[in-house]
Image 1: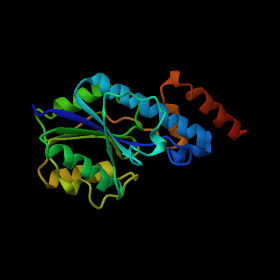
Image 2 (image 1 turned 180 degrees about the horizontal axis):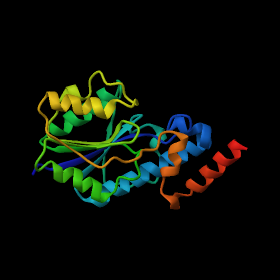
Image 3 (image 1 turned 180 degrees about the vertical axis):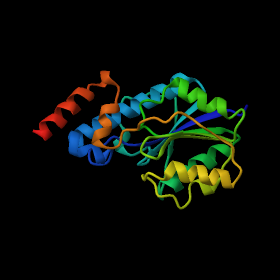
Image 4 (image 1 turned 60 degrees about the vertical axis):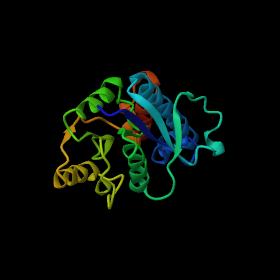
Length: 216
């Protein structure tokens, strides 16, 4: 089995920059605080999986002050996402690792439901498949595992729409890329998604209260 690298596509948890679609529910600072919590949770899960190197592929650049004083773990690799749309940035991250002989588990920070078991399932699938993909209920995907780079998976995609996972699977079929589709999970992008956060994070009850007050 090829060595595994978990690449986390991460945006600095800065007010007005991270999780902007949650600002109507949480405010800019509240959305940034949730972004920080989801980043920390994703990092902890990736490191706990012990599958291999954990890389934060960051925007802005890792040297930017936005990444300072976040109290993040130190046993990981930092890289810069660079310019371009999301597809171009993900493509570079995947190509960099696969060209070095590593399989890649590409994830974001928006799906707290991804746990150690899920990461192991995605990696294990690469023994028998060319790829594994974890779709989300909004039509996107929260995890893409690949053993080799194929740029067509990242080109001409309408990112952040309900067609991303389906189109990705269609392209995989066209290029004879055998893929294992994992269990669909919720990611956290819109105010209604807050109800899917872990209960002990403290957002579920407060979100229900906000919905009730808005309905009055």
